[in-house]
Length: 97
Image 1 (spheres, one colour):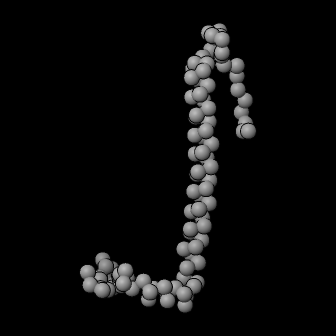
Image 2 (cartoon, one colour):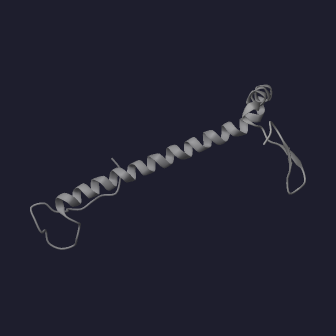
Image 3 (spheres, rainbow, N blue to C red):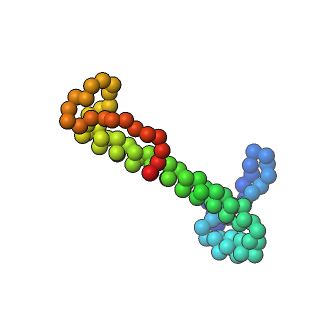
């Protein structure tokens, strides 16, 4: 591809491809027309909030899994019935710490 080319789409409307060489022109346009950036900023902020929430949920689940594996390593897998050794499962409660 050359410096910048005009192409035709399926709907036969030409569009302009901005190459790496033209980033200064794009920066000038965006600086002049800052309002064009607002929708992108809002999307980035929403994505960050969604990622923060995902990381929080996954982090808690990972810590819970490590604690469960640690308990199983010490007491064996939980099972109904009589206690089989010196250390056993007693019960659990819903909630967070």
